[in-house]
Image (cartoon, rainbow, N blue to C red; front, side):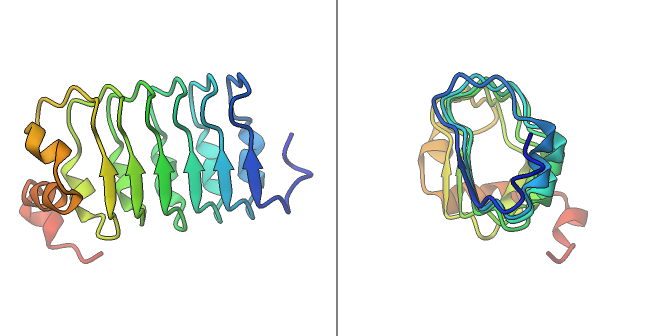
Length: 164
C-alpha cells in the first residue's frame, strides 16, 4: 500500500476506524510524523523499524495490547503517545529510544521495566490511570525525574555499568 509513497513525511489517519497498520509502513523511511490516534488498531507491525525518520508517533485511543521490541530501533523518535490502549507492559527494547515525551496513561500497566530509567532524554512520562502495583502512587503522579531516579536504582549492577 505505502510502497509508492516513499517521499511522504507526515501521515494523519486519526479517527478513521482503522483496524490495522499495513506492513508496508516500513517503506516510509522519510516519514517524520504519524498520527493514528482514535482508531481500532490492535497491533504495530515490526516493519515499523523501516520508518527510520519517525520523530512523532501518536497511537492513543486504540486497542493495542503489545508493542513490538523493534520500535526501539526508531533512533529519531522523540514523542510516543500510547495513552488509552490495553498495554500490559512496556517492552525493554523500547527503552533504547531517545524519547522526550512518553504517554502510557490509561492502560493496563502494573509496573515498568527498570531499564526505562536509562532513558536520559525523557522529560515527560505520563502514567496515570494504570493499575500500578509495583510503584507507589506518589511516584506515578510525581515529577518524571523522581520516577526515573527510582527506576535507575532498581537496575542490576551489571546493567548500570554499561555506558549508553
